[in-house]
Image (cartoon, protein in one colour):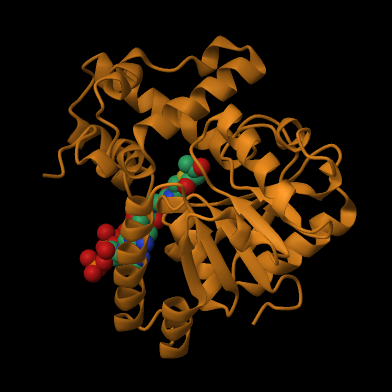
Amino acid sequence: MSTVFFRKIGIIGAGQMGSGIAQVCASFGHAISLVDIKRSQLDNAKDSIRQSASKLLEKGKISSSAKDNIASLIVYTEDYASLVESDLVIEAVDEKEDLKKRVLRQVEDVVSKDCVIASNTSSISITKLSSVLKLPQRGIGVHFMNPVPLMKLVEVIPGLQTHKETNDRIMGFVKAIAREPVSSKDYPGFIVNRILMPMINEAFFALMEGLASPEEIDTGMKLGTNQPMGPLQLADLIGLDTCLAIMTVLHNGFGDSKYRPCPLLIQYVHAGRLGRKTKSGVYSYE
Ligand code: CAA
């Protein structure tokens, strides 16, 4: 149990990241309010969490008591008032700065002054996001990897105004839910996406130029550099819209043309080919 650091946790956004974070935190005994404005999203999250927990139990990756916790400790709700007793709230809505700022303000209106308010942003400045808080010293980045239940890493990103105590509590919490934290300064893309996204973007350039087929590009990188999946397969898993949003943050944040998003990636997003979640991205999942 990681109750030393936080007892009750609120998570905003029931997409694949928010639901994964809810699942992992609940499995370690935290009471969770998973909040989304769409009931259908909450229903989908409930189904996918149930399926994921069953699969992990079958494979012996979690205990039956962890699975019971997942089933009993998550409340799926559209009501921000359910956050009132939270010690930690993690925002995991779409990668859109204005939306995230709006959500953070709404959260701060509900929670107590001791509650830590974290963002799971994959690239947006934590200093900028926390600037909308009345108490910016409680704002911090806590960036989980996808798929959350299987991935060990969490990036922890203190902003310029983040209090040391906020950072220490989050570092302790991440370790207590059996994840490995790495600390990054607050620059665009932090560590992982700063390095991963240019590789994925380059794979799209290679595809656009007809260098090779998607399968060959992925096989090349998978078997040639011992990665578990190729960059185009991974882009479909992450979501092409998220990849584009992160490349745009890198491009704007550094002002360097080496981060310009590939036109083919942009085109796929315009066409609604967002990856696995729309059943069509670089590959088809029908
Ligand atoms: N819960 C439970 N089980 C899950 C799951 C989940 N959420 N997601 C996938 N699985 C299951 C699969 O269904 C599969 O089950 P079966 O064996 O019964 O079919 C099982 O996990 C293993 O999957 P695979 O056999 O396909 O393969 P794998 O052993 O390669 O593991 C993987 C899958 C962990 C996703 C692995 O391919 C991998 O590590 N891929 C790279 C992921 C990665 O790089 N993530 C980081 C992305 S970057 C990011 O997240 C940051 C950002 O901001 C964008």
